[in-house]
Length: 82
Image (cartoon, rainbow, N blue to C red; front, side):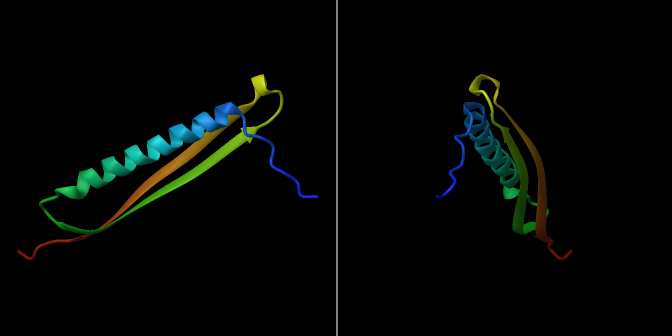
């Protein structure tokens, strides 16, 4: 017999949708900030999203979910020679 995961509370599904939108927003914002950078040629952008999503079961009306996140940007640039 294989144990199945309990169904996620509706609050968690909503939170995951919010997390998805937030990641997309930060990605667009970060890339846009460096897209037309005139002082250097951006060779590489690394975006790191560290997410911790916790769901607590129980009675559906009392189920809860919470998220914690961390966001960092690494940029590799090449500057023109003077």
